[in-house]
Length: 489
Image (tube, rainbow, N blue to C red):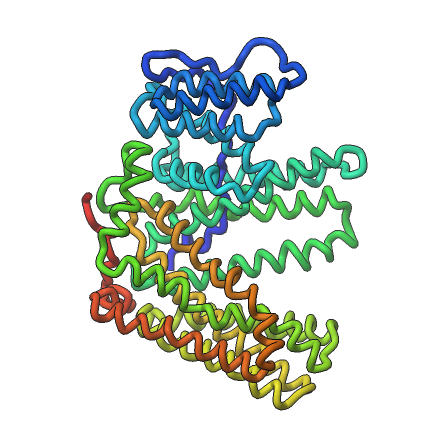
């Protein structure tokens, strides 16, 4: 397995300063003269209305200029920043912007400003993902260029966080902490894209297991390790040590090769927006793939949402739950992910999804036996260990499957869309679980969680009839062809 599968990196999504932008033969200044005065809300509202009229008419030059005036009058008006980014992005999509790099840089700057105030803003997140697949930096290639800058930016952010004073300047702490969080949240897009583009289909399961384990080990290092170091060093030195942990990753990024892609990546931002969706939904079984992603781990997600209340009701203390969870749960997940990765090399991802999905359902059923046994430390240890082990195996194959379903030309955009669906069951299915468990009782609840996992497994039969199982069945001795990955488009 090549070393680049182990990279745990972050994405640099910063734009350097401002630059002149030409759109529709009109030069739009991105810095306005004068200093902002106290905002007149009615005047700002009228300007926003005018800018939206320009947007609706397709006049992106005047729309961008209008929203720049909005920002100059009221710098804290989130709507102004988001609409400016939208005008610039739309102008690029419609080929109305001459200097695309300057326009994209300013759009990224505005998206970053919006996310600093509203981290869940989906329009800003989507705009950033689209730009990732569109633009290549002039050094190290399409992926490694972003990766090396990301590592350096993360190092600087971590070191800066250690140098802040929460008591004296809490706003600076909040800003730098957001940057660290923002880079960390963005890392998944680039790491997943790099792994998908560089690793053969037959090795994706093993590569995914290494990535999952590296992520969990990093959590252990930064969590427990950071607290241990804090007893011996100042927080500034602890953050410095944490930042130094990125040095091996920087060296690996410099030494690793740039992934080679069959076919051509999108040449315009419009292509980066439309082509990934057209390519995906043109495949046979596209809807079945989405349904599988939503249902495969729904039973596991529902059961996991209620384990802590279940343990407490059986009489286990917080200390017992925490200790057993750390000892058996953490290392069982690490072992399960690694075992799942190795087994997918032998049996392929498709059969791995069957086998690991079955064991996930069995592990959920084990909670029924724990409910009947009651308070028992050995029983709790066994159930937690087995449940985490099977969950690790299932996650390794599941993540590899999602990666394999992406087209390598649009990896970042398509994988981000698919992986975002992976978290939906954890949010939606977890909401009614407390009411359901209270209404039907613990044993019936965990039986229900076991049964509800069956539809996800049955969809695998549909994959076989659609031919999707052929590529997913590739083992280390064969070469699987994933849907659309080698198309020249």
